[in-house]
Length: 512
Image (cartoon, rainbow, N blue to C red; front, side):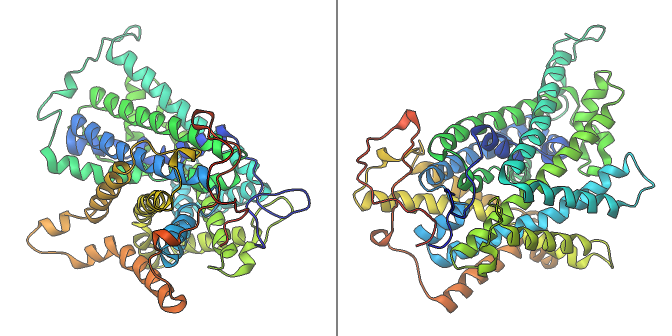
């Protein structure tokens, strides 16, 4: 146990300085971004307002089940490796190894994606300035925010997320005012757009399923709360509260926002089909703000999109750095990535992640972008694989806990729908994962190149898992062989357990 997840006087380790407000905003910020601000219009256009609402509510329910599963695990064992550590402990060491590297790679590539998006956003205001300069500047900002301290990252992410939340709340307030005619001088828009043409359900069940596939990407990032648990000041108290609050806020934001878009903008409006950051002028948010008489709507939303891009890049750098650090502390990555700075930042892991993200971005600037596109393709499924890993790990964790005679009532936080929650989440997430490019199989001739580009991340994950087994050995961990460290002393007051929990002694680090 040479590396610790908490720090004490004179002991190197990550600093537990993230508060409840940081955790809540990290999770919210991770799931409110361009998927809502830009791509939500395409969802309404494809499935109609009713179909889009149903799809997002379905995926939101799945995400809630996943977050309660992750919340139970993270409150019990708050480590920076999150579901990678849980997978290694309660499924198979190779499974955890593959989850960890899979997630690190996903966010390292995401940094490159956000740097490319930043160029497009800044081009709106400064078309003459070379985009690569903006990307380099934003990469430096992300690096510094993560290099200073975890508190610096938390504060930055808090304010980034707050800007997005305020924007959505203003959008909802203005939209409702337009619908009911509260804005002076403007007639009530009413709800007639919800029933024009084929609305509210356009394209039937196939269209709704197609939107559900897209909606899955919009909610990715909520699992960041599990990674941040390793540096939470009071995880047994803050994790349960964050889990309870985050789901309802996110679902409320998405459901109300899509309802307003569907009510104010006909699903037949061709502007809704735009999903590119560069076309911020036809973002559904911009369209609604313009209808309300805000002449500066495009500039306002461009600034918000810039915040979303920086937030996603900032979160990506944090998540990938902590995952690489945890892999190193557990012996699944070179030990040099486990070294910490004086302020508890995994400096080598941060440098490596920054370098990989920069190289991935540079690959988009030269040639025909073949390398860059394949990097995107190989990382496209990684978020869904992580979600599947959460569901599997939680199910086996709880089964093993009970089989060994421990009482789940003593956990700091319990998922309220076990075992149905993780089973439902796993089943639906599997359908979403495998159905990402179902259109390729629906036509008479299968485009295997397109299919390969969509699903290549899945065989890569299994190859890494199998490779670990071939080199290190191991297998599925039996329930009776699982190790259950005691939860933290401080507990959620709503589920507070007696001191004698009947669980084994606590472990001070994620190592076995």
